[in-house]
Length: 148
Image 1 (cartoon, rainbow, N blue to C red):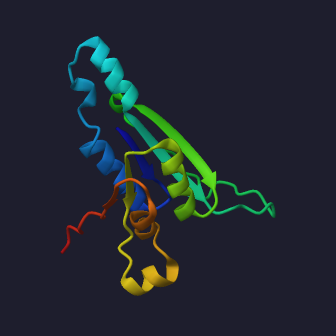
Image 2: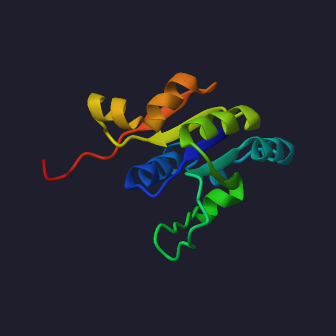
């Protein structure tokens, strides 16, 4: 299965990545299969982390702020191939382009829980992808607050 997770600096996108690792790829390294089947399954499993940033104008060099690191647990790396991509452009359009180019089976994105008005004014990457991507899109909502 080829799964792509859209990542930005938000907590919601990291929650979507954690959800994907826990729910879709957890336990893959403990599966037992004949060696020839295991190699085919390993080759078919691809997790792509995609970060799309707005085009940067060369007026200065960013230092420190906004830097993010993505860590994938070692047990996951043993059983699936992990690829990281950082691209420039409009996130909505780039995500849909990469999905088509890489023949992704599932896109996972986080939800910022924008209301209808904010979504209409600001635009929602998850909403755009849900309507325009040529693969299923799973929108992971952030966890409920424990204080409610």
